[in-house]
Image 1 (cartoon, one colour):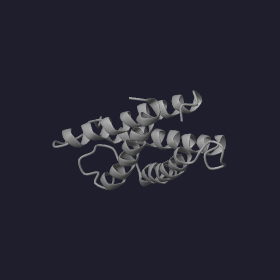
Image 2 (cartoon, helix red, strand yellow):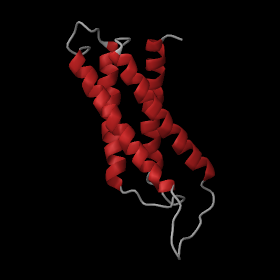
Image 3 (cartoon, helix red, strand yellow):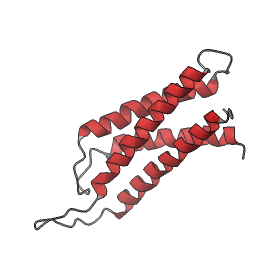
Image 4 (cartoon, one colour):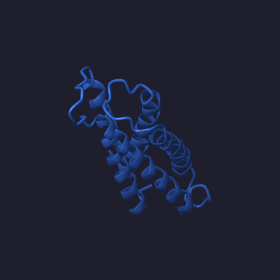
Length: 137
């Protein structure tokens, strides 16, 4: 598989992670730590901007403004912010500590999906950055 095709596929995957996180984050009943709505909002806003800006960068040719270096760097910056916020959201799955900590059950599948999505997003952003710096996209 060529690198540009991989970048397009990973862009769709990353967009799905952003949407799924927005849909799942309000349901924090099975999680241990409350991460706050600011991190989830940062993840959603920067993720939406990343999908939009990076998508425009991929579609337009490099000889146009919308396919130029500035738009590519802005898109990558948004992806990095989204990834950072997503990794912060993973802290909600850390176990509680302390005398009155309660172990909650029924979190396995949601926790695994969250880790797979956000760690996959981190790998995707590394690939986006590599593809951009090597002028593959």
